[in-house]
Amino acid sequence: MLTHKSNTFFLLAVLFLLSILSFYIEIKGYYFVLIFFFWLLIAVAGSGLIRMNYHLKAHSRSFSSDRKIAITFDDGPTEITPEVLDVLKKNNVKATFFCIGNQIEKHPEIFDRIIAEGHVIGNHSFTHSKNIGFFSKKKMLEEISQTDISITKFLGKKPRYYRPPFGVTNPNIAKALKETKHFVIGWNVRSLDTKIKTEQKILKRIKSRISPGSIILLHDTSLKSLRVLEQLLVFLQENNYEAVTVEQLLEIPAYEN
Image 1 (tube, rainbow, N blue to C red):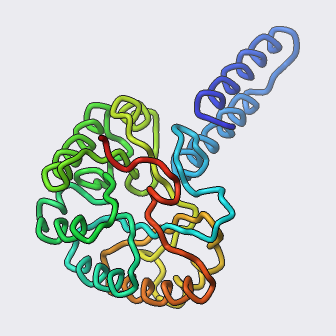
Image 2 (image 1 turned 180 degrees about the vertical axis):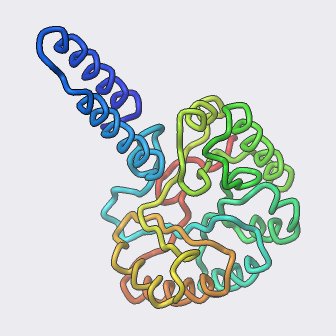
């Protein structure tokens, strides 16, 4: 498995070898640049694609052949969340919500309802800052611990799941999570429901990627995503899929005892 450590070791080893060879044969400078560019390309891809497990191990799907999938929601709770909960309740489906700490503080009654209706809760940072990829380890620890405190205040127990905002990882995030001992939960079906404009295109994208063991990423932030959820649940039923929580799918405990 290609990791940041092995990628960097490869870079340094090749640069060292080229440096030694340069004493005996002419090595063009652009070879050094190309090697560094190749390293950088892999590092950028690994930081943005959580399934690569480049900086840390992320659980992005189950490899069981059972026709079970997990629907997950990021960025809530919001004003849309109650309608999402209504749809889930109507269809007797439990989901997993990766919640933002400051959103919990804004909508405590909605968050309380998520818990009361038996859905699983995960940590999704406190601010979901666009600059979170540049935060220090200390700042990341604050983001994670603040959200854990907010969740525990309502839930009565500490969450063990963490999902990085935007799916971005880096050495500082990895170090922070190693210290907090959270399980990192990714996905293998990204709906792009915050980017794609029409619900039909979003649904088509999900349908083309779903398979037994999939973890689907949605957001409880728009009516568009709500309508996608309604149609997705019909599709799952028609195709004999069972929607379960991430905890049930991966058999990894969601909370500390």
